[in-house]
Each structure stands twice: as structure tokens, then as C-alpha cells.
Length: 252
Image 1 (cartoon, rainbow, N blue to C red):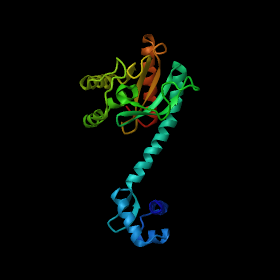
Image 2 (image 1 turned 60 degrees about the horizontal axis):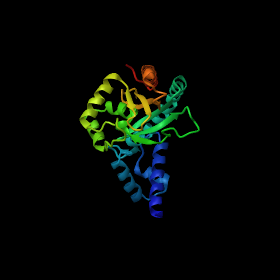
Image 3 (image 1 turned 90 degrees about the horizontal axis):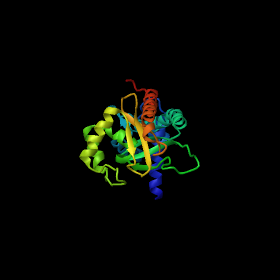
Image 4 (image 1 turned 45 degrees about the vertical axis):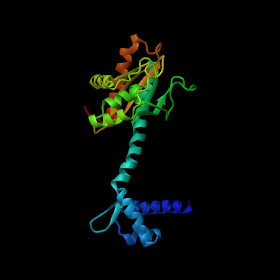
């Protein structure tokens, strides 16, 4: 165990040296800066290059690899997304008197990364970090409707299509038809498909690459989200998602 910890420490030592350098550096420089033996540095660099966390140039110099930058940028982008989303979620919560969520797609699940709750002192339906099946979630259905053919097939293979309520869509062909409607109209509804008595309206959020990075939703009981309010809630959720997308660099 102690040896494993030492290896991890050495990997971080190498990454810190590479990050601190303004230009690619050689093996001898990394050995000198870290105090680690040449054979160990060479072995660790080979593993890091194989995982693309470090890049080796044709002349044998090393620098931070794109994989590390990509990994860190995902985290930074998510923090930016949450920060930019909060005012829109707060407005939806106050204007509609409903609970507002921001969620992302992770495989066949939705993960809720932010929540504005009209009942802050109660556990209403979800909490930040909560996971729910995407196929019966308005956020999940929004994001699945934006997937390419192969991506959708991969996601569908992970779905259990359990019948949570009488309204849950469990037939894959019917679900695919449902997703086509969602993609065309730009919003989705969980109409008591996960929990009886609960409704939710969601709309997707896109970034500057036109990629669906998240979705936002407004949810509540069927009395709070009654039929006569649906049109108004759909309009506000879609407007909020469109404006958040613009904040993330999306242009129509």
C-alpha cells in the first residue's frame, strides 16, 4: 500500500514539474527537478504518455497532454454551467412556484447537479447528486433525444426500462418514437412516469459546440403543475434553457 502511495506521489511530482514549465522539457530536467531516479521517471512517463496525460515530442521532450487538459476542462465547464444556471433556476422557481433542477446525463441515468427548491427544508423528490433513470425523467429524455444514433443505442442498452408507474414507457420502439417528438418540440415531460403524483417539464441546454451539456426542469405535484399551467411552464422552461445556452456560447 505504501509503495502505491509513493508511486502516486511521484506521478503528481512529475505533473507539477511539467505544469510549471513554460515549454516542453527533457527527461534529465524532470529527474533533476523531482529528485526521482531516471528509470522510475522514464517508466512513469511512458504510462502517462500511453494514457495521453503527458505528450512526448519527436525530439524527446515532454509536456502536459491533452487528456489532462480535457479532464480538468470538463470540471471547469461544469462549474461554469452551474454558476450560469443558478439565476435562471431561481427565476423559474420563483415565477412558477415549482422546484427547479439542472441535470446531466451519465450513461442511462440523470445526475442532478443543482437544485432550487421551493421547500428548502424538505427532501422533495431529489437532492443534488441524486441519480434517477433517464428514460422516465424529463431531463433524461431531453438529453437522450439529442444523442446520435449510435450514442442512443448505447444508452438504451443500459436502461432497465422498469415500469415505475402505469405511465412509464417501457417499450423501446415506443420510447424511440417519443424521443423524436421531444427532439422536434424542444422539451420533454415526465408525466407521473417515475413517481405517481409528480410531473416535470424539461428543456435541453447547449454549449458553444452545439453539444447538449445539460437540461433544466421545473417540477412539482400534479396540482402544482396542472393541465391549465402546462403551456405557461413549458414556455418559461424553454426560454430559460435557451437563455442559459446563450450564456454557454450557443448561437442559433
